[in-house]
Amino acid sequence: QVQLVESGGGSVQAGGSLRLSCAGSGYTFSAYCMGWFRQAPGKEREGVATINRGGAGTYYADSVKGRFTISRDNAKNTLYLQMYSLKVENTAMYYCATSSSCDNYYALRRDAFDSWGQGTLVTVSS
Image 1 (cartoon, rainbow, N blue to C red):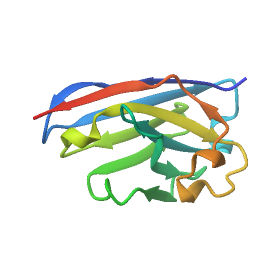
Image 2 (spheres, rainbow, N blue to C red):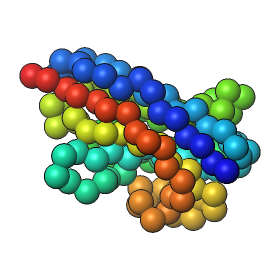
Image 3 (cartoon, one colour):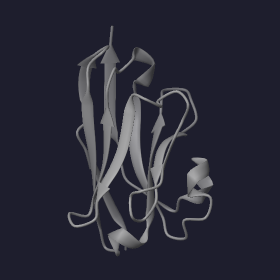
Image 4 (cartoon, one colour):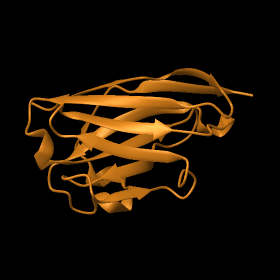
């Protein structure tokens, strides 16, 4: 049974940084592609960044390219999202997710991912 636990969210001023973590358990961590998604109030959940099994392949939403970095440590069963130059519009609940098949994981589509964490809240103030 896949379990994902996000942490690292919090409140930060615009221009600040945060690093989110996602600890995975109950499955072979290195065998799954993974991703970060977010959902702002009143909006649909959207893909932020995804990463392949080994960590060499990464994909980003245009809105975060150059500011966010997704990475993983397969030895620690942990996924990360380093966020720099945060903007007010980045305020959202951030979720990590796994893709057991890795089919279309690069497209940042929700339907390519099959297990989800509970989320961690990021609030960016001006």
